[in-house]
Each structure stands twice: as C-alpha cells, then as structure tokens.
Length: 243
Length: 263
Image (tube, rainbow over all chains, first blue to last red; front, side, top):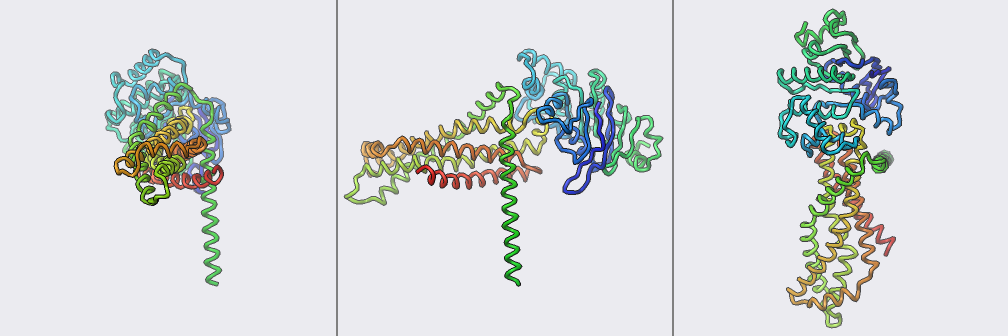
C-alpha cells in the first residue's frame, strides 16, 4: 500500500500540489485522473522521489519514503517499477539489455537465468522474439510494452504508470490496459496509473482519485464516479463523452 | 546621481554573477561528491569503464595523431625561422621543439581539442538521457545515476587522456623530425641530439600532471553540464556548447596555475 499524507509541492513559490492525502491499495488498479497541468505527474514524481515534496509524507507500507536516507530510498526503489510517459527505454541498449538491466545490477543471476527471465517478461507483455532490436526499431506501442516488461523484471511491489496510453491508437491502448490489469492481479502489486483516458478508468479501474488544480478533488470507487455530485468531476467526465 | 545609480547597478550585476558562479560551482562539487557511493555492481562499472576507454581513447586517436604531427612540424619550421644565426647550433631547434611539445603544446592543445570532441559528446549523451527521462528511469530503479553515467567516463578519461598526451608528445617530435628533414633545416640526428640533451624527466612528469588535471576537468565539467540539462533538444545543444567553453576556460586557467606552482 502507498499512502500520501498532505503532500504539497511548490515551484518558485507557486503551489502545484495543495495538500494531497490518499491511499493506494495493494492488488488494485488505482487511477489518478485529471486534466493536464493539474499536478498528476508532479504527484507521481513526488511519490518516487524524483521531486522532493515541499511538505507532507509518502509512505510505502509504513516506510516514510520522504524521510529515508538516500541509501534506504534506493532500496525501496528496487521494489518500484515505473512506466514513463515517453517510455524512457535506454536507446543505446537492445530490448533484451533494457529488460535485463535491473537483473544485471541487483541480482546474482547467471546469464542464462537472466535470459530466461527476460523471455518470461517479454512473453508476459506479448512481445517475444524482439530481444536483439533497439528501441528505435520498434513502434511506440511496442516500446510501452517493453517498458512494462522492464518494470516487472524484478519482483516489484509497486507499479507506477504515467499516462501509459498517451500517443497510442485505441486498440493498442486497450491492450496496454488489459496488460496492466492482468499484471496487477497476477503479481498482487499496487498499481497506480495517471491518465485522462476515461475508457481506461471504466475498463480496468478499481479506485479513483481526481486531481483538480492541485487538490484532491474526489476519491472513490469507479462504480460511484458517474453518480458523484462533484461538479468539476462531472464536467471532466462529460468532456470525455462518458456521461 | 547618475553615476551612483550606474555604480550600484554594476555592483548588483557583479554580486549576481558571483552568486551564480558560486551556486553552479557548489552544484558541481555536490555532483562530484554524489558519484562516489558504493557501486551497485562493480563488474558493470568495470565493463562501462572499458567501453568508455575505447570511446575516449581509441575514438580520439586519429585526431590526436594528426594534430600532434602537424604541431611538431609547424613548430620546427617556426623555431628555425626565428633562430637563423650562425651562432646557434641546429640541435637547439630540436631541444626547443621537444621541450615546448612536452611542457605546453602536447598536453594543452591536445586537451583543448579533446574538450571539444570528448566533452561535447559526453554532455550531449548525458543531456539527451536527461531530457528523455532515461536518468529518471535509472533513479527510480534505485541506481545512483550520476555514479553510473559519469564515474566510468571520468576514470576512462583519467587513464586514456594522459596516454593520448604521451602519444602526442612522441608524434610531435616525429612531426618535427619529418619537417626538419623535408625542409633541409636540420637532420634527424641533429634533432634527436638536441631533444636528448635538453630532456628532463621532470618535464614529462609535469606534462602528465597537466594531462590528468585536464582529463578531470573535461570529463567532470561535461558530465555535469549534461546531467543538469533542463528542457529539450535546444538545451542539449546549449549544454554541449557550455561543456566545451567551460572546459576550455578551466583548462587554460589551470594551465597557468600549474605552470606557476610547478615550474
């Protein structure tokens, strides 16, 4: 479980996150929705320590991530897999080397064991047989799937995805959604997805947090979202043509 | 009144520039300090260092060879032009070219060129990784990104750049001999006689101290500029340019400082 307690973040005096408090449960697909520029990505970066919150705390299963020493932060990060909006695959490495990267750095696996694990992860994302290609040689959707394979290479507990469907066609988007849902269930991990794709929300979401202008605008179950009396959330859903 | 206004504006500008310099210099020192944590896996760092040694050393060999030969050849011709006198023996030309190659030309000119070639490559490589979130990905994986990316380049630079400088010293003399023979100014025996007579092992030591200092400057300044890139493709280009300019200025400053301290 990941818990945020009154997380605030300012840039040059301008407050972008205005006291976010919420919990993301294990074994569920937790969705963070909201318009662009309202603080979703900043919140995710605060959660993994790429940005330091101005105040507030982030807890990973009762470990206060915001107040840990750097060496302990790195230990927690080994339990986190993250899928970046632009995939962030290492372009100088092949697909196999990308997926193998954390295994090589943090495990004592032999080359053969690492190769088996890479093949397993690539099969999980339905991308077998592309081991020797470079990221620039495959499509955006394939890169996203390789990004997921890289994220799950180690036995992670938390999977964070920043707009995994951005720039993808509807068919590939659904494939990515199904993949994230099945991985969450299979490995019983805490998955958090930043999105403004309401189809993703209704297809795979369990719990939803709506970020509006840096505030926690609404929190609840997906099934309750359409019956919410929150006006800004209603407008957001209407704009997505899912009312 | 106007004078005071301008004076105070200049004061503010100087203060701001000083603060900016110290802020950047402080960040640079913190960046270097941040690299020195226990490596996640030593074998990976060793592999990366060997790869970087190949990139920096072997990758720069051709340009160093060309520069060193022409540098020695041109210096020989110019020294001969300035020392036309029956009172000066010809081996003196060899001793001057040999000493100036070792003391100044080979280390400084070679490293200024490497600041352009190696420095811009390092800054643009790391800068591109920064703007495409690859460095963020490393951090989220629990890897010390500055150590993983910059440390192998720095160690490779500290090993290979002095080696390139030694090659440059040798080839400068080869260039000098070729130019002397080709132009009929002095024979290779006369050149070598002068070079041997003036040779001091301390001069070679001084050249190596310079090479190590410049190697550290080129690799750390360029890595820092790349690592702190913010924005997109335009900023990667700007970081690359800054890496070359700052490295060159720091090399020239440390050139003067080392000459003052060690000669």
